[in-house]
Amino acid sequence: MKTLKIHLIRHGATDANVLGQYIGSKTDLPLSPEGLSELRLLKENMEYPQVDCIYSSPMLRCKQTAAVLYPEQEITAVENLKEYDFGDFEGKTAAELEHNPDFMNWAAGKIGATPGGEDNADFVKRLCIGLNQIVLDMLEKGTTSSAVIMHGGAIMMLLAAAAVPRHQPVEWTADNGRGYSLLITPSLYHKSGIVEVYDIV
Image 1 (tube, rainbow, N blue to C red):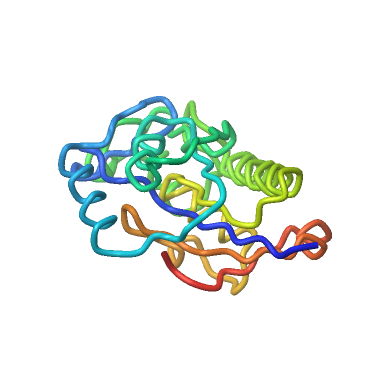
Image 2: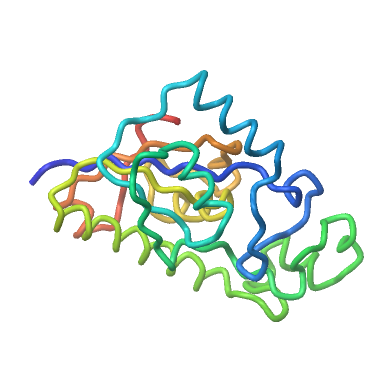
């Protein structure tokens, strides 16, 4: 069975990224004009991995990013890769929430879910299911390389849960249009769910 290469790439910038707002699965923002320009410059000045297929979060900012970076290829949306549901924190900044006790407890890891939002453990489980859907689809199609356009927080949480070397989520941050390359040995992955990060995008 062949080894798979999967490249996780963070979507381009939105206006909310610049403002520092928590924007999750409830707000389907497009890329900002500046975000689009930045992506086009990245595509001109760096060599993105050549891949057999493209997967994406179903959210507009990810699909737009996929269309800029891989304009000739069909995009397969994976529902389980959509962004975290921030609940009552949606659209707000950390500065606006700094006196909110629920926010402080959530940020400190003392509670596992945002008020009205998604449980952290459910989020990680959903992302792992999404990755597994991609692996199974690639094996079924006989493809060995793919790019997956995702959200920054989703990349952090997925890699913290499943990747070696082991790191905390904050150590898996990625700039817009950048990310990490994974090596997946199907037999090992199916036994352990572990993926290996071997490079950056």
